[in-house]
Length: 239
Length: 246
Image (cartoon, rainbow over the protein chains, first blue to last red):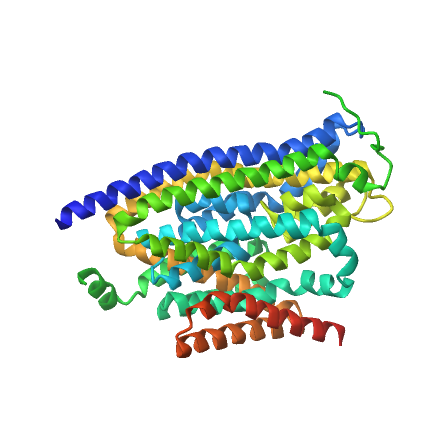
């Protein structure tokens, strides 16, 4: 009986993987095309006298700063998101400040651990929920009412939101992540490594700043594994 | 299909005349439609798989709702920042680049780099329709590279994690937790040295979250766990407003 349940669980997760990979890569390709069509139209078909050199130089300037992140960010977030949610996250955007917090809340609200099957399904559903709220609020408050809101919201409020939104959000998200994970050792490892990276390593080797987050993620994984509570892992496996 | 816009003029600084053209609206709504379709297909696939992994439909719905509620605070803050950028990029570009795919910080920086490469700057007298179009193209190409890398890397990483899961299931259980804590510690600590107000806000936001989670536990109020993020952002940003304007 128990082997049968296991196979059926494996088979249905395999089907889920296959479906999300197919749906995910097709929709992401479509999203990519739609996001490029607009600027292509503006640049080549609207009489703005833009030369390919202008585009080349501008793209090179952007690539010099962000090119590293094109590869490093997918690598950094894959262990957290899993393959299905990758196709959602990199199209919906605002990953660390919206999608991951939503996934953490959803997992802790049904008591699912990240990296388990229930955890993966919970975070995919949480991202679906977050996407629905996000698309709707963007369409209404920016698409429909944007130009009216910009005329009535005081300029200081918008200014404060722009400058201070990240610190106002990150402190809460970190506490939420720590409480939801309930893993003392990886928490200590992660915070110690971040402090070291930010206040010791980067001042000494400034060129590492671009890779700071990715390196902390990598070493948090390695070090948490080395100092893991072997007894606790053993008991959960038996239970 | 050469369709010069009536209002298009390379040297004009009337950005909205080209930035809000119907075809750009069509493309922006296209991206929205694609994400809605993806969301629908994904939730259908998750609902089909859930009962086989000891996850009743009630929990699937619960996860959707928890994700939706938890994202209200972050979504509204993205909306506020997006509104601030309407004048620079027009509605369709803001919707796609700031609201979706990218984030305000990266996309504004990309647009600024592109404008500088043409000897201009965002919002200045030299910020013409031509500069806007080049900046929009550069940030869209850069965002496109993110998606392209995701499309190419995900299948490779998936094979790697599958073989690791077979050889070492205990490591696979630990990796997402350690990665998540590593990423958020680093992102949080990076905010602290920016200014005294930044440091205060990180502490206020962290303390508010701790308070709400404690309260939720004591009162057994599950809804408060989901709303906590929105409340914490509101408290911290209000404090930020008073410190900034004081």
